[in-house]
Length: 298
Image (tube, rainbow, N blue to C red; front, top):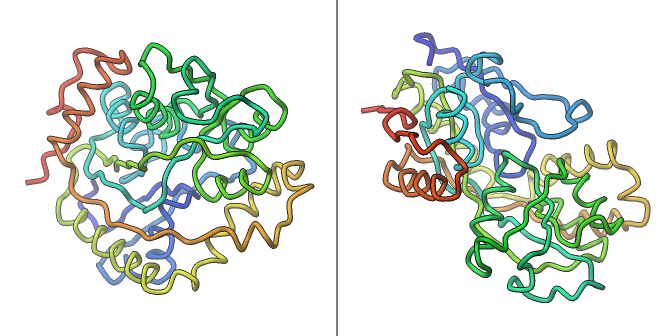
């Protein structure tokens, strides 16, 4: 974390981090004494995932804070040296989902044993799906396959390349409009990575501004519908074929703005348990140490 009041924030144009943009647009970071720059990759130029798998955000992108799935935050900070985990939590009251085509024999989560489920590797889609599926099928029967962005996964499901895909709202609403069937829901768990030597006061100022935006959205979610729906509009520009037979007005009505929560300082007990699970599944180096991963903010 820099010693000045300047913060480079990596922004994901996803539903669970809407408060970060709202806080920036409404000047809440500035009110907390923070000069914030949102760093966001253009949707049209992203082919696989927004967070680059081969580059560090705290180094290559010079980012001070970045949102990422809880399990990927452990993997990035240990395996790539991409800063330290400074916060985690459930950032929005919305589930990850698994959808199937109605003509498949899949009727319940137990029917997903041995079935290929399309995910985006090294994102919350992968780890959340794995953990959720393990509650219903033997870990050896979990089959995850990489298909990239939500639009790529939906296209693969539509074209019969896979029988199940993971999604997050508002793409879950799009899947329903396309006639696909919901078979599984699971929690949404996020982490926040920060540069080495994270400064507690700046992090507290960031959280305070974020919390203010959360209150605004939760108090009047309908006021933020248009901004929330921009995510679908971006998808429509890069994957227009998915929207050809969709009643867009009905889709927009179906989408609801979720209730948001505020990130909390890194929970070492929770992250330690997740780290052990990752080791058991050989998702991370067996030598990974929590002290080298989670920031000590004091």
